[in-house]
Image (cartoon, rainbow, N blue to C red; front, side, top):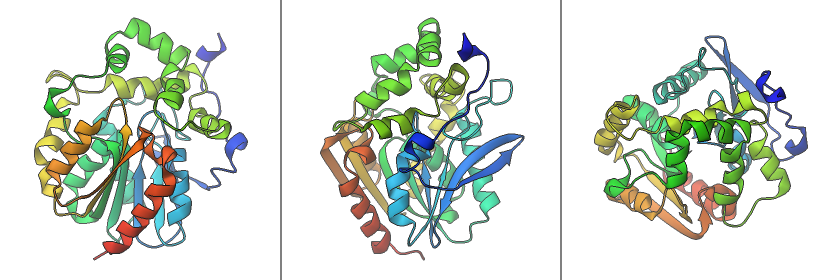
Length: 307
């Protein structure tokens, strides 16, 4: 089968009118780490989750770039970054955090950073922020977590299957791309146009290009024996150290993974946060209600100027 023969180039031409950004790359030990860097001013760093990529933030980039420097990396294995095998990259949470730090150091950012996070971006971004608190002055979270499931919630069954039953998950996720394709329908409430669907799914166009979508799920820590458990516990226990940084929460209520229990947990941990819950939006909240979220983000940035 052709899908076993190697990585397939990502063709962005069918949706480039939606994603008209110049590509930049950082060399990470021989791996190409792609990022968008548009505009000038206070840096706004956006971190995506799984199975999205920098394309998810395209409208926010366009809206903020006239007044802010918008920086949006693609995690290794995602978007336009390299998609190595497990001999070259371990696809663990710690590596994601290290990659983000390498980019920030490479860019030499002098001004304080606004952190925008969605899905896996939450734990990646907050872990780095805890270790580098002096670099950040605003935080924006959208349908994400930086703590263990509130109330001891278990993984949704579909994620549990992908994480634990590898004989099913490997052909389903790597062979048939079911994780990325299912998200195009399950993660949104209003539905996506064909061009947007093409854009979100484009990087995951063959077996070897889908490894990150699988490994993200398999890296979800459930017990202390899991590799990334200790790192998530560190963030969970210490998250309160970031409570004095202005925080904005924009949340899609129709999220079958990050439900309102997660929204309420963010509000409990950050009682001074500005919080908005959108009843007609799902996990891809920025796809469902960008016309509501983008003005809120812009207002939040101006209400909390850089110091």
